[in-house]
View 1 (spheres, helix red, strand yellow):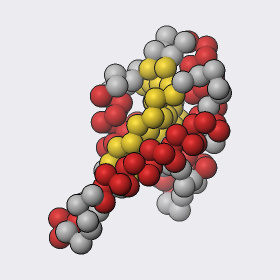
View 2 (cartoon, helix red, strand yellow):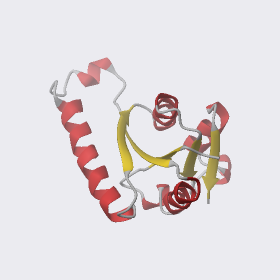
View 3 (cartoon, helix red, strand yellow):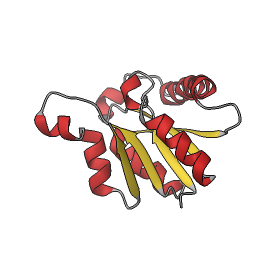
View 4 (cartoon, one colour):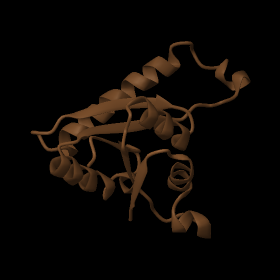
Length: 142
């Protein structure tokens, strides 16, 4: 049923993956699907502010996040399962959607957690935007 499963992971917030990753792993094992973990590196988004950072800042940050994601996968993903690790940049939901399209994901599995506003509580802002804009199935795990 599923061949390529994408799981967004925020390495700073366990709630972003604590329930979705085990679910995705189980689905991968059930369907023989490949597991892809994506971590999004936020960008400043303002050219004036970007000018204050060294030119190699983004490349160094991506390398650091990729190493952290590799360590994370070694601890959280079963040893007999290979996970593809992806670091993207930009807004979280845009990065998730961009990666899903690039890898031809047929399922995005993501967690949602409590926020302050009621609409954020019901789904979560990034999960809500991914749900609204995704062209593939999205499984939101609470």
